[in-house]
Amino acid sequence: TVVGICGVEGVGKKTLARHVSEEISPQFQYHCFLRDFSNNRIRRQDIKLNLLEIVASEAFKQSSFHGSSDDGAIREMIGNGKVLLLVDGVDDSRDLKGIMKDARRFGPGSKIIAITQERSLLLECEVKHIYEVECPRYEEALSLFSEFAFKQRKPLPGFEALSFWAVRLASRLPLALKLLGSFLHDRDKDEWESKLRKIEASHDEYASEVSRYIGVDDYAPR
Image (cartoon, rainbow, N blue to C red):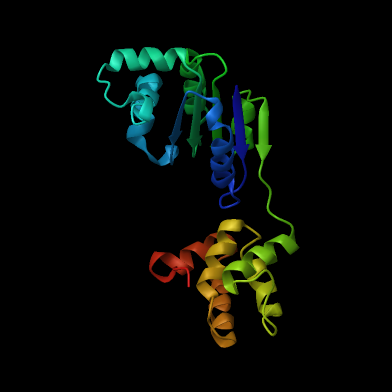
């Protein structure tokens, strides 16, 4: 079975997939999470060579394999076992089709969870089970932002209008809300207005600009 999770960047696809994985992984004998797949050229090349070996190498780290050195036996066990495979960052239908083809060698009941920004990619690969992660409603977005900006679920008195502005700039995307909230935490109103004006003036794609403007050095939970 293949399940697709799709949605725009920063909307929480990976968070959802991790939560689902934690909930259902006890139902599987082996599990493997291939992270940042589209940006890992070596991993993409490896997938084309032998998906089973990659999953086996991950499973080898699990406690049931400690002390074993027979790779062939491990691969045979994986091939007969129930496997949960998460693939994050799929952006090419050829890659997903290859993974789906190779995964047929997994045991009965195995499941692939593919994480992508493109719903059309999942449809092209004839994935029947698709869940699209949507942005939270405005009230939910404001509450999430406030948790990081004020350490409570609503804006502090006097910061309401600035908070509405920040939520708009973040396009209600959870990742951008968390980044911007943490960035503005413990700053005064003048700093808020200055930072938000710079973000708004920088680019039309506000949510992406939030991450770019804050940067690695500036972003730190306060």
